[in-house]
Length: 142
Image (cartoon, rainbow, N blue to C red; front, side, top):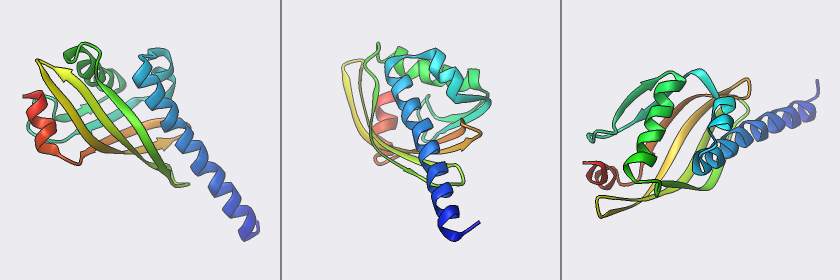
């Protein structure tokens, strides 16, 4: 295989991984559980940093979806993750940059975030959130 063919196939794989993450953001923000089930591996894991009740490790698709449900439930459906950019590599590592917003108990959340995703075989197997202002994130959920 030529270097040019390898580059194109690597670029195509990176684009496929990025598409999985873009579809995941869309499904999350529209509450499309069927699409989320198709996009997340049943053994997926999710990590949310910080000291708030939202912080922790979540293992298995059901636990990950329970975490997502808390974001929507505790904000009465106002929580959104507005995707701004996706950076992907051919090895399945993808970074989604987005802005979180929502309202909870009269407080407003406005914080930027990135999530490190790992995509394998067209499915998300892990997500690790990183907040640009972790203090604001923690204070919102406290």
